[in-house]
Amino acid sequence: MRKISFVIPCYCSENTISNVVNEIITTVTGREGYSYEIILVSDHSPDNVFHVIKELANSNSNIRGIEFARNFGQHAALMAGYRECTGDIIISLDDDGQTPASELFKFIDKLDEGYDVVFGAYSSIKQTKARIWGSRINKYMMEKLIGKPKNIETNSYFACKKYIVEEIIRYKNPYPYVGGLIFRATANIANVEINHRNRMEGKSGYSFKKLVSLWLNGFTSFSVRPLRIATLIGFIVAALGFFYGIYTIIHKLLNPSTPAGWSSIMSAILFIGGTIMLILGMIGEYIGRIYICLNNSPQYVIKDSINLEVSKNDGN
Image (cartoon, rainbow, N blue to C red; front, side, top):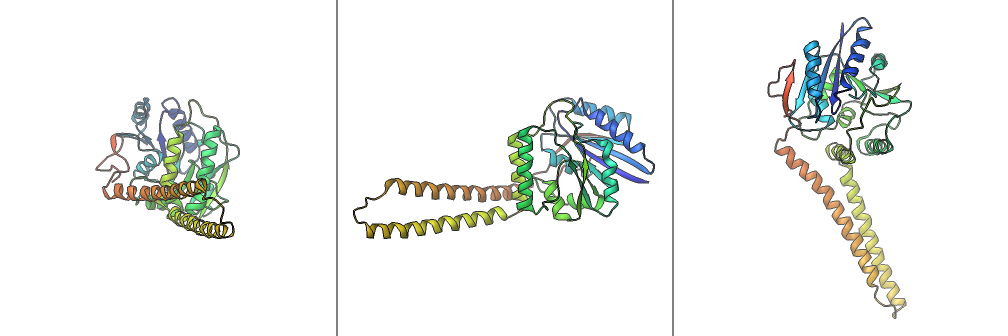
């Protein structure tokens, strides 16, 4: 009997999470040789989703629930769920019904071909233009900074083997980025094509601010390439300044009557000053996150739970 663990971060989904859970149960019980557990993590949702999670857990002992003390983000919710998994295969999916649980065995069949992680690849994406744009930036960032292969699509619907999750949860620092942890653990990754459904209701919980925060988590926690880019920018600006200085001297020697260029001087100062501030801000972001890690800031804090024992399991 193989056991599948489902980890679902929940935010503003009190009217949809029951349908997602029921679809999971129907799909898994419809195929012999599999058992399941479902771990639902409320990321301090402002609605009554944790009340719904409690009702689901009370009616089914295979369902477990976690409530955060404040909003820590989707990836922290995944980390909390992963630490409670006992299955051989772990599947992560959304709480809004857009990721069809009815297609979960596509992932398992692909894992059985020898892959460690399998991501869903949507044939068509049912998201707003802003969210699609944000996903493209995230994809580009993962390719350039984390080393994601260009032929691999990544999203929130994926399955992996137990040992991958065991490696992921070794990360104890704040600002987790699950995609970076996966690509740090293995390169044996594949895609399966699945449908992407319309949201049952509401809109995505990812605002532009949260997307920016997610990108920062990715490239400050799992790559030093931005610092190398900053060094390259500094070198280019210094070279431009040097050659511009030579040009100015030669131009003045050949044309002594040429007046001193106030506007060009100000432009150069603003350009160089802006570049310096940008690089200092980037370095400061790294230093700030190092400082927070040294202060042992938790990944998450569990306020309440159901059907699981919480013994100092607060993300430290």
